[in-house]
Image (cartoon, rainbow, N blue to C red; front, side, top):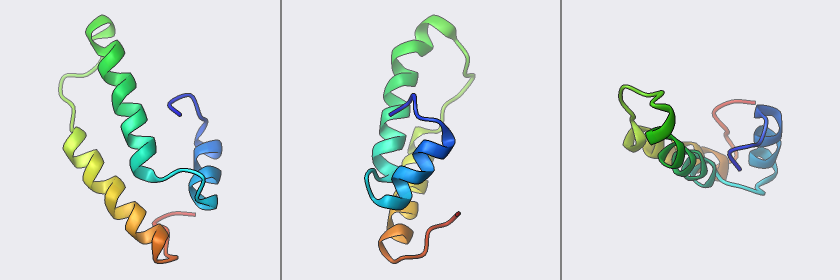
Length: 68
């Protein structure tokens, strides 16, 4: 999932094909795989990303996505 474009990810989220949590976990996994080699982040906020994904999923379930 980490290779999806923003448009593709947005479409899959809107259709319910994937959840925000699944997408975030995929990206986190990829970061954890490559970060030791690329050293691109000074700090990561995975807990915050997970919390925001959970909130987004709740909004989608209620029919009120946070963004179009």
